[in-house]
Length: 169
Image (cartoon, rainbow, N blue to C red; front, side):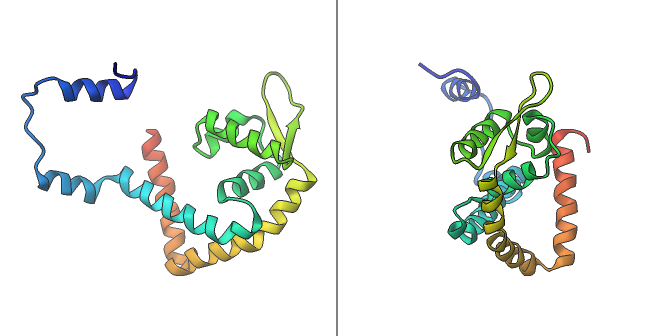
């Protein structure tokens, strides 16, 4: 039995006779060359691996470091707001926050209403401070490889891409 959701649609489409033409190798090659989602995901994975490798000795992954750094500013009123700002699924963010809390790097902070947010513990602050030199090494390697001006322009273009993807650009 097929699973529910997007997989069901895919599976059903594959099992029904179709009058649609079969994709040519040329079409498939064009998709591989031009698909925005594919290239952004490939780049994101490569950049994440580069930062994780550089930061391995700190004991933090780049995702953990960025979350700890964001939380340490105290600027977030809720997990939902943090998820929206960093374009994360709320459930994925919650899972990552629970892992950081289990390590004693963050703790829940009292807030108004039903909103929940976390604050960085002294252990978490020490982890951030210890990781900064490793982050800086990765940052300088990537930014240096591109050049400061190219990175600045690319960062602006990535922001524009996020706006377009959200439907607000």
